[in-house]
Image (tube, rainbow, N blue to C red; front, side, top):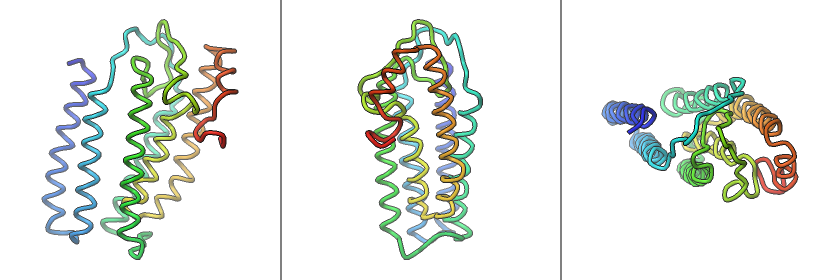
Length: 222
């Protein structure tokens, strides 16, 4: 077990303990529907974290350049803000929760989360040893253009968009949708800009040709 896998395992154990503690508190405080929505979300989130740890492949060579420009931090913070607001809105304040849409909207959210997991799984497997949450270049790095990357250049960021949208629906929080529009989407666009400039600099005409054959996030649309 390498250091990354060990750190992930520690985080999952902490999440599992928090999951059990929150479940214990929520059982006595929340309506049963709200309780099961929260428990289902934590369960599938933990399950996906385990799957992602299993399919991760450690890089075979070292990273020789990193030009992230804090885009990963911006994307993570904006996504966490969506989750935090949606949870508070669903559990405590109900500022933008529309009860008349439940339970259909919650089920739609879980379906979106499942699609997010499928796309992210395919992207991780496609990148293999080149998978890195930061914008980085490894020794003997080759451009991945097949499987998840055959028609779109950024399946990871498509999955990131589906992730925050699924949270909005699961917790029926329309205020969090506004955060997605104002914070997450700009963070994704910025991240794409940073990554494409980096890849053009290192792969030149090969990446430019690939750009002409693919879309960014949605085939034949954008």
